Image (cartoon, rainbow, N blue to C red):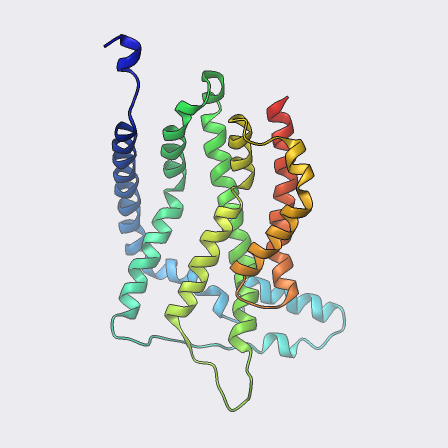
Length: 263
């Protein structure tokens, strides 16, 4: 076998490399998760903040309403108690949140490992951008996380938590449903904010170009609205636009990135 052939990896070789990569990622995430598990008080103070009436977004809305001469009493009147429905719920939720927190904190390492796995498909001069790509991937992911935590989730939670078909039917919100909604929206928004990085990579592989993205701009807008409707638990147009608008702006940014990549 020639030296060139000896360097060719089979499908099973790639699979073995990917398996080892996943084990490394899982080990780091679990190690960080142990640390976050021990930080229960500050961790859940952050997690549960949107369920309280003094959350930053609610205070801002109340301030704007008051400055416009509107009655802000209905805005400040916000009290939703969370309940634990099963004996093991709080402990299992603590484990779940610790894992997700560990994943978010370890995300730079995760992105670095994943990019290292796909980097052989790129040319040598393109591999020099590894640090920049990993940095921007993490920053974009965190932008999605922050946008969801401070705006999208609080609005969705307050709308759903206070909505009643009748005054005779009180809302009893379980801690599990609160956490499920928060973690799902957080991860989905973080992933959706990776659109510019995905577009750059596809452009590097020659799979898309700026002309293609411009030609299908209207289709992309409809697709973004559909995705926004799917990941948004509320039915109001305001929350949908809060989700769809930044994603569409990222699509426009991606067009510019792809155009510069191809030039």
